[in-house]
Length: 173
Image (cartoon, rainbow, N blue to C red; front, side, top):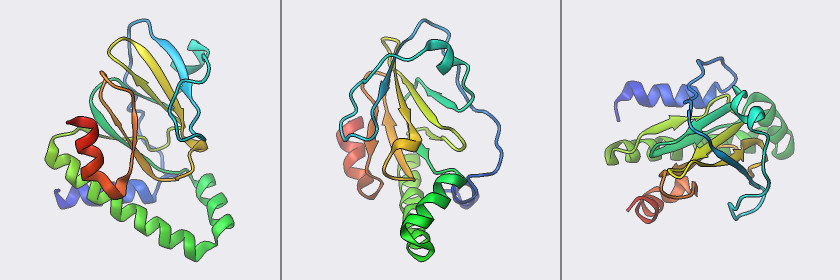
């Protein structure tokens, strides 16, 4: 991985409260919407959502191509978790996440998988090749930092950043 990209990724993850440009990708065809209950281990559709609410939401990152999508907490999520576990433990955990995210991004770049960053987004909208959408609400996930794999011919997959090579092989190969 190029050092400049690694530094960029590091700062993006650490400074998650900074403003960014909206990198939302627009889907111009009719899409069926469902949501995923991210408090459960299973990623099955839960309920139908209001189409206008999703399409008009700048807090939503739309993914409709093969990609690995990294997400990270906003400042309020970080403050809340820091209060729950203490500053020292929080910072140690954050360092571990940053390390594994950098390792994962480097590995995925070598594999030719496009990497997307969901910085300052609250929702991930995965649109499959049959135009069905699955919505993940990021602030309901147990982990503050993480990654989803997506291939439009499959359902999104919450990848284990500590086992990146194995998860990559089982999902993309």
